[in-house]
Image 1 (tube, protein in one colour):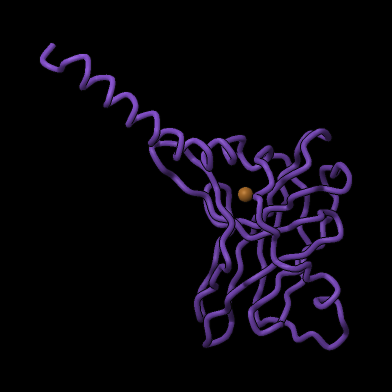
Image 2: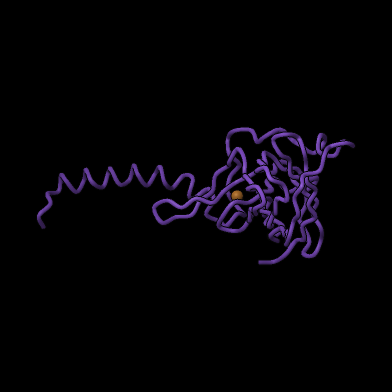
Length: 178
Ligand SMILES: [Cu+2]
C-alpha cells in the first residue's frame, strides 16, 4: 500500500460526494421510465385545452411507430416513443405534450453519467428541418407522469405535441409491452 489511510479517507469522502450528486438524478430514472419521482419544479403548463382548440394549426410532421410502454397497474408513470419526421424547411421545436390520460406529460431525455442511466426534463426537443427525431427508450422521450388509470395493452393513447409557435400534432400511440 502506497496510499496512507488519511488519503484513502479523503478519497472515499470525495467519491461519496460525487456519487451523491450522480445518484440522485440517476436513481430517479433508474427504473426504466417507470418509477422515477416527480421533479420538484412544475412541468410546462398543460397544453391540452389550447391544443384542442379549433383552429390550432397542425405541424407539418408525420409520425411513425407511436407506442406507450405498458406498465403494471401500480406504476403511475410511463413513456411514449415514436419517430417524428419534419416535412418543412424549418426546424420544429417541441415544447410540450398533453394527454387526457396523464396529469403531467413532459419532454425528457435519458442521461448517462458515471455508468448509470438517468433522465432529466428538457425545455424542448427539436425535429430538424427535413429530418427526423426519434423518441426512444434510452433517448429523448415523452414522459407520461401521473397516469390517471392503468393502461391496457393494445389501447390507444392520444397525445398532443405542441411546438414553440403554438402549432400542434395529434399522435395516436398504442400501448405495447416492451
Ligand atoms: Cu423519462
